[in-house]
Image (cartoon, rainbow, N blue to C red):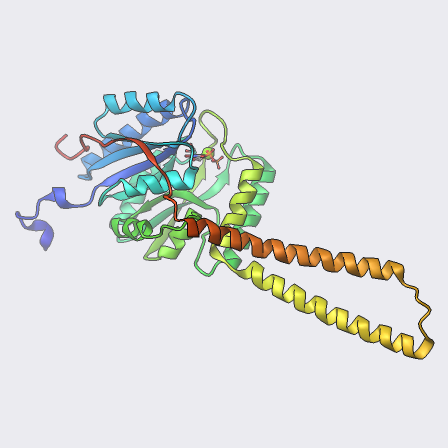
Length: 331
Ligand code: UDP
Ligand code: MG
């Protein structure tokens, strides 16, 4: 009903901002921007005002000047530069803080998430979904080791986390304005975005897609980074490791008790000839190892608590240049 009232101009309808975090992507961005521009044109024909926001995550290559000239050429392009490399999750957070009341579509700069799918995401959003996420059917151009570890990671986090973390789903997703507003309230330092999206809830739907190989440049994530990312995700969304430590402790204590009983029985029945140096060493080393693992687990959580307690900002902005125009139906 409301939509037909002349005093409700269409401009007040939420627009769409495509959010791209870019770190050393000078080679990939010129390939992505024309594809995105074409999609924005299509969306405009459908009456959806849309823009692009590129966040330069402290790149050390020509990314920033490439972005500047893209913003010069197209008024729909907004650019934000962080003071240094804060990591993809912080860059996305910075972007989300700068999109106003728009819906947001998050896209990788390397062309692995096809921009041509955006209209499909928008269609699901218009059906009333708040979180439309792309689920990868195939991962081309990635080694089997990366595929296998990614697979294992999603299974582990899926079981441990109390809020859903859909498998094989990255950051390629569309968030409705209210989902973006909700996400903005989560200011934790441990920014495991995939988990945060799930925590927000609302109506979610997945769109299967084929993940293309990188268009240019190299992956910014090596195995060590991914491993830390996985620990971040697990500790941020589950306290199960702490409970595992408790159970390991309980089981060890039970075994120790049984073994102690056996030693006493043996000493009483057959005397105590003071042997058993190997068993003693084995037990000491085993207990030491178990204790160190439990301490390390506690330390992981304690360290995160420390990070939170400092309450530092999640990112610092170096430069911000908003879009001067949107692609609207009239344009
Ligand atoms: N990225 C970022 N900051 C970083 C690392 C990566 O903004 O510190 C961006 C990167 O430019 C790309 C996206 O995050 O747009 C995904 O990175 P990449 O393609 O290297 O990851 P992969 O697809 O290999 O997991
Ligand atoms: Mg990539």
